[in-house]
Length: 206
Image (cartoon, rainbow, N blue to C red; front, side, top):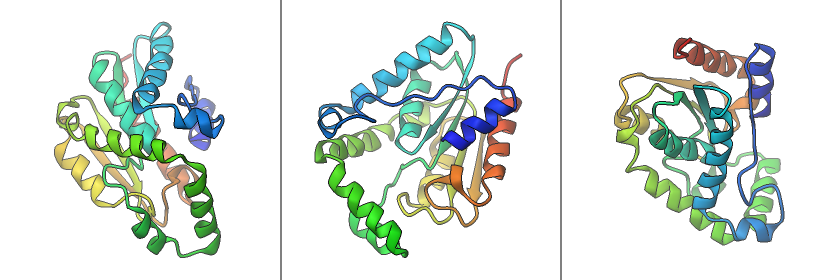
């Protein structure tokens, strides 16, 4: 997310990034954090922004996209738009992921991450994935959906599912060529950044 945040800041936007509860610390902290803690910590950050700004545009990456979707349901009148980057509506299972990792550095990184992330955090992730299906039809504000065409963690049908089941008529899908899960680091990342900026500008009430 950092490259996108830096781009938007350079264009004059106020941007705030934060770390979810349990993340960025010890393995024990992540183990003891639930999906409800993740959502609550994001909500606290959103409330702080809404204290200073009447409208906020949410951008969520991966699991953060699902968390942002839950906040949209709770704060529909204060959120101008939602951007979902690499949203894991249909995440690949470990066996499928291993088949898609065609470069040894990617394999090593995945194996290292597999042993670092507590099983409890993985369970919480799949719970929020399942629970999010119930809210997609209730999202009525503008949504931008972005995913790389070589995403090794999320199935491509996630994009078509969102496009079909989100309640809003205002939605756009952007597929990033030759990009994996980290669309903000893609070779054509500037296209991602420009798409996000255009979406925010289009749906910002001045």
